[in-house]
Image (cartoon, rainbow, N blue to C red; front, side, top):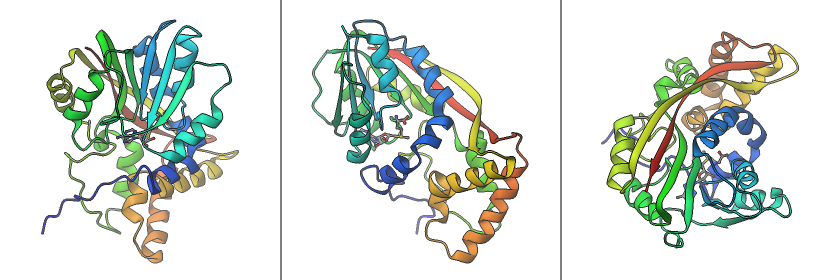
Length: 283
Ligand SMILES: C[S@@+](CC[C@H](N)C(=O)[O-])C[C@H]1O[C@@H](n2cnc3c(N)ncnc32)[C@H](O)[C@@H]1O
């Protein structure tokens, strides 16, 4: 029997989408700097046509819509009905935005229409990434741009590495297949370059982006640590590792993860290092 996890780690139109929706405010705080860095790299201009891939609740779609202005247009595509509904409800009136619930890897997209394909952490979940990026590239104009942010490896991201190390002696999570779709599927720089190159992109640039994440917030330090613990138990690799464990294991794990978070700096937050790639390319 294989000791590598082969079942999909995410069910975006089910439990993963529900958990993401329930933690939106926290996740937006956590991901803000990464999203802003990707938006800066994307350099959207007035009048442009943009596709926001895996747009979720639209957090990146709205600032991009402001940048392209009334003469431009942005299409946000996401596979989660729940998140698309939240995005539609939050869309400011009068902006040139459309949200569509679809699988970006296969959904019909107009050929050669977009100036920019963008994503904030929405492109690491394709089972066949070369086919998905080839499909999406065909929707770009000749010379059109790709810009996205994705996580580097889990070992480089302390918000995952620290809690997972804390529970190592309490529960043995099934090791994830590093090649499987999932949040850290694009951790390897060469793999990302190879996928994009095979999909027909050129001028591929993959630059590290590191920042201190506010993982958990509260009026006091203790509240912030509790908030970080609650978030780790609800979304991300720790929540998946503990999902089917007994109450006893979950209680012991909570104490160990809390102690690990308590070692991190922050007055009303828990500051933990995060590591991503900012990826740009051209059609
Ligand atoms: C980590 S979340 C990021 C959401 C959003 N971009 C943000 O930054 O808040 C990943 C998103 O990708 C979406 N997604 C995953 N696979 C997808 C696919 N094949 N087509 C479209 N969206 C997908 C999920 O539903 C989810 O909203």
